[in-house]
Image: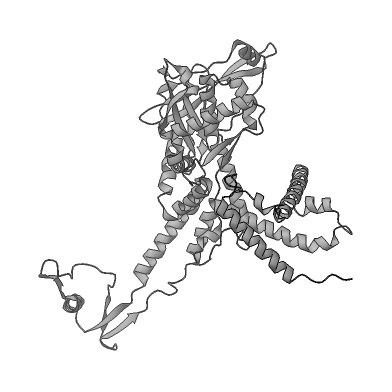
Length: 545
């Protein structure tokens, strides 16, 4: 074996701490890996219905399953709901609100996360990456760095065919003085063989830090093979495929009507009777066919057709020559059995059965269309999103450790607080929120007359509007601020309607230029003032004595 790749080792203090940890059983892992004993390697396989003896066979079978239209349609629905490509932005973003990292470090982590997404080209290939992981049930990426400048972080990630690589684990045993076997630590590495890992025990040994491995989290009963999400659909898909083939064969063979010719052979001997029967068959079947492609006339009597008739001899004393017709197959339009296995296939893939019914109009986000199956499907999407997020965790951990942003031990302390926010269907989310808010407003209108008598305002906010304590405090502050702003606006509007007349028209100045009026303008003002005074004196009411 050859060893290549890089490995980020722990500090001496961390190694000392790990040596103090003792266990009587090996460390439990979510993925199924090949365990080997110290000093050697042993190949293992599991025969699943004589179809798969290795993970490579499983991956090949999963890829063949997706070629079926029914399975491909279900997978498309799953991937389309999991990865939303909109607005030319990344379909996922990192959330660091729950971490205790300084704001400066949070900013660096967000920038480096964007760098990781750019290495994966997740903005353009996010759909293909997620689909590849979902179908195969695992995904491998080789992490490439510049050995001369490791501080620059990860330079490139390269996809590795899962049929050519395998994760291996070696448990280091240790016996204490009492004779109990302990497993203080384990050694993990990857074995790569360009010819495939089918029943092969040779390959290139790769350091664990140079490979990013994201399993599906599903394993077989013996914990030896990593299964994919399509594994449950193997049997329903095979049943559906065989049933559809049998339906086609039955309809092709039974749909046409066939004829039975009863030929009267009289008292002819057997040999002559058979010859006479063949002559009658050739006579009635010998029809010349014109070939429009070649312009020739040919005889196709040697070809068997689906409309093959039956020719039977009839002896003297019968009813003579007779032609009868066999009816075709009955109930050819029934597809209940095919529809049953189609629904079974969708259930095995956790896809709502209602999506198969083309006659049902789906109104996005309406409460009348949201079924329990759709809610379960959305929860399933969230679970596989969380499993897929291991890809970002592994790449970001290596990248931050290489660039010196944080050590691996520091990352292990904060990684449980880091979440990833996947983009959702904006239209669906908007309409769903509006539906929920409309229903709350309707209920609020019914309860509002009872507030202060049977219900308190605080109870209504918490139980009807589903507000938290922080939201209630924030909304109360906003109401106070908006109330003071409205009073100020009303005052300003009132002041804007007050007209201030000048004491002396002669002293009127131009507000735009702050200059005294010209002589012509003063003369005009005086004339208008005298005219106004004369008009007002004419309409002046007499004073009461």
